[in-house]
Length: 110
Image 1 (cartoon, rainbow, N blue to C red):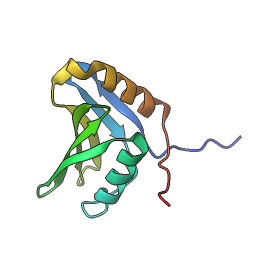
Image 2 (cartoon, one colour):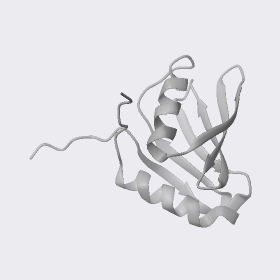
Image 3 (cartoon, rainbow, N blue to C red):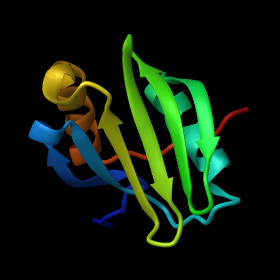
Image 4 (spheres, helix red, strand yellow):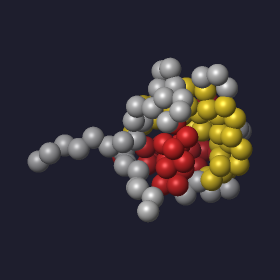
């Protein structure tokens, strides 16, 4: 049986801080927007606002009525979700952490 590596996985779930650190495919500053859009589409989440700084993308996203930051720092290729309300969005964060712990691949938009 071939063991296939999933595109996305869980590195760490910091429930008390309201943060999920994600294992993601390699990206750089210019390629993250496509990866981020595909990730959000797969999660049925939407972008509320995007901000780009010198080395980090910070997107305010809506996931099932819960607003989170999706952040991506290209030098370290780090990607994480961060709650605006700390640990107050426990139900949504627990669900996302479960999805990432199981690992998944992005679907291709047609």
